[in-house]
Image (cartoon, rainbow, N blue to C red):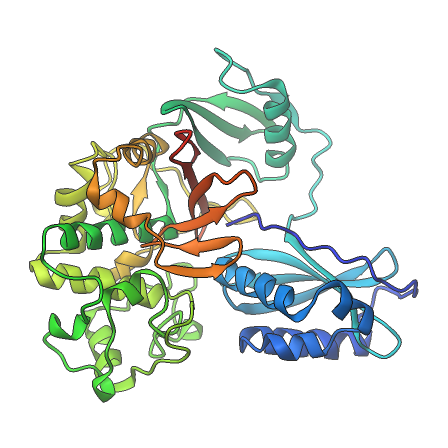
Length: 443
């Protein structure tokens, strides 16, 4: 998730500021972040100036902020950067699954009269970067090549990007490497990356497989299949876990991110800790509303593995990877076969791979664009019942987006339906989108 639809509001007063954060801006932004993390979108709307309320009514405000939350998560940290154009305060804002620039302008009454969100890009010297991309066999256009170069040149050296372009059910691959400030074309379609939360689509595909085989029903509760009692006899259904409406928090409350290795945050969260959470601490909030939850999808993968009495990895290999010829895919780092591209931080330093342990269903998969494209193209086979089931709408998020089982369903003005998911872990980011009518897609 590195790109969002950006809302830009230009009702901004012409006030001149220095490059020290104004106390009024600080208070307003702190309140904005607090209300955003608490899902209190009405409170944010109440912070708007009259002109802002007219430009962005409560319905559109709520829709935008919910969409931002579903894609990026809560805000964990913000860092004041500067005042831009002499009007609005600019903050480097670290969300749970992305880093964005949050810009907020206030008027003389400390009411918000403009804000927008855009991807954060480190300011680096990219003037001397050399474009050595080659266009072979018309895989991409010159314009696409220029777009790729302009976006890749700000990344650190040793960055790799691997792209699959699916057009009419046919796939082409395009690999990019930045080395010594030169961006070149390489063949990395078989190179392995962490795909992060795209793993959720595969966990939901496992669920669909179980449903088609008659092993579970979507509306059944997982309580009937786990051998442990859930706290307060809480009921949670399979479908609620798959479409993020269970009311579970993003992460279990007994996983304290301030006390774990931030470069491998899930590694030590084992079955013991998960069972402790389920039996002692489990509480639901906003059940029936969409609330993105790594815990929920991790719990779904855990439950399915318990039903079959095998590991999550075994489920993937036996029911998905072998079926769709995904030979270079796995959820366990020690089983990787092939070239693993090392994840990098924004300074270009290598970082450890994430190990998801008991929450593997939320984001543990390693794969290649070649393997993912094989899985994507299989979605165009209308006779495939399990894949078709994952794309059926189960919940409406807003007028522009629904959710199926794992897939987000994007409704475009052309009436074509796009199925999308993305992912972000330490050092990696990923995105996959397909459109079954035209049999097009990009990974």
